[in-house]
Image 1 (cartoon, one colour):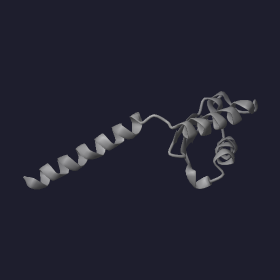
Image 2 (tube, rainbow, N blue to C red; image 1 turned 180 degrees about the vertical axis):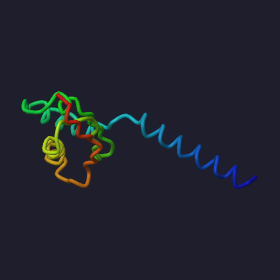
Image 3 (cartoon, rainbow, N blue to C red; image 1 turned 45 degrees about the vertical axis):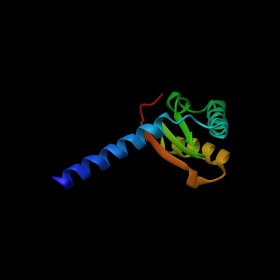
Image 4 (spheres, helix red, strand yellow; image 1 turned 90 degrees about the horizontal axis):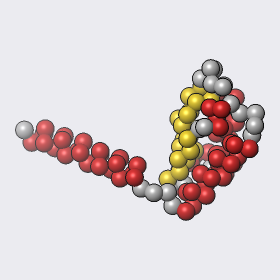
Length: 103
C-alpha cells in the first residue's frame, strides 16, 4: 500500500511541477529572445506558412521550437535562426515536424 501511495505522490508532484513551469511567465530576457527569433523567421519570405507559424517558447534562455515545416532544409534553417539569436545550439530544442504538404 505504501508503494502505491508513494507512486501517487511522485506522479502528483511531477504534474504540479509541469503545471507550474507551463504557467510561469516569460522573463523580459526570454521575451526578447522569442521576439528576435520570431522576427528572423518572419523576415524570411522564402519559408512556408508552416515555418512562419512555428511556435517559439523561451524559458530561462532555453528555446523550444514546435510546429510543421515543409522540408529538412527548412527545419535546419529555422533552427539556425534560433541559434543565431541564442549563440548556443545547446539552448535550442527541436520539436519541429517535417510535413511535405506544409504550404
